[in-house]
Length: 466
Image 1: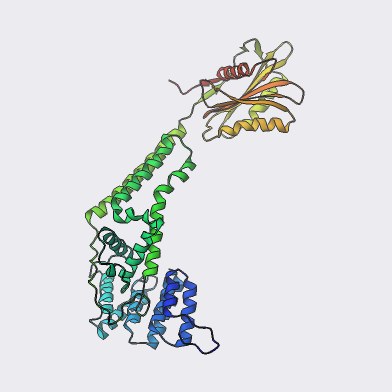
Image 2: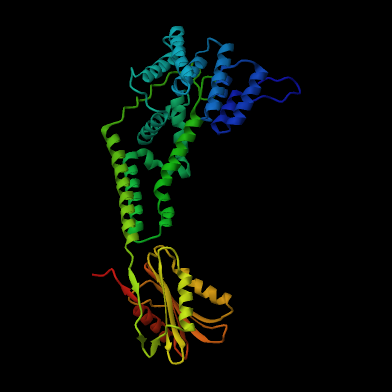
């Protein structure tokens, strides 16, 4: 575009259109304004400027787009493309929130029909207005037209000149879509375009199985963050790819891709058929499969959450060679351990065994029973951390068989701050958590673990078995 000597050159409509296709809406608006200020009224520039506002999908920018159309028509009142674009913008506005603008769309449609009844612009806006009034079938959305054209082109490519043509917006969008699908990442998404119903149903079924796998294999809930993306991400990526192709392919008269007045006519593209019964049933079936899977997973997980072992804790008067102690430092130690596990809904217990004659404890067991779902196995490490903070000298830590009650059990041999050699074995399962501390007294690791398992079985009694 011509500029005075020394002035910065203004962008052409082709450059502004390219910036718009690239998604730089603010830059496109700035350059369109600069070009209008430098060169005066220009239909293509007004169309690009308004489009750069409409692409923001924002109420304020919709108002600004309407102002641009009004400005353009004030300068170029007979321009059919501006008139049609303004009418389309008004007719597609929210009838409840912008009733005046919506009604103005019908006035503009009548104005088009009066001034150029046989023009393509007048026919297109008449169809749009009729659809808004309910006197004609609702036209297919831009996204449906795009998917339909891309599917036909992938199945049976038309003449290459037609395939790559950008002489009208529909062909330009098709060309951009096929170009995006030809890129390395786009090729992986082609099956979703070629066979949307079967691939969509397969993805829904796969997602449903992934959701059901969580309760089936008792995986943690966060595993869904790994299982869901492979089935959802392709749809998200395709949606973004198609939206970008639509944005880049949108053209108006006077911009790159628009047909020249003397360009030879191309055959019309096939009409987009209404949704078939299969196109309505298959998505509904996919939604039903997914809803059933999610509901089943929730119910299944809930049942698993309620299904945890129930225990009562009690202790006999004697255990092996020891007597149960009621008033001793050892019993107080067990009570202290029990208090450490206490939380809402749990019942704590603490027992000590040793010599009643000397009132010395040889073994202490403490813990809590109740709903301990979701408690991680590494909670057993809190006892080791407590020992370290109490200046105990830790010797060996080992995992061991938890015994018939299941869950996890871990043992640790250490020397206490008072220079006693002890072994502590802690366990956790869905219904109990506890700790057995015994004098080492030459116990081997296997013997210490066996003693802990026996003590656990001594004080815990299952109440949920028939």
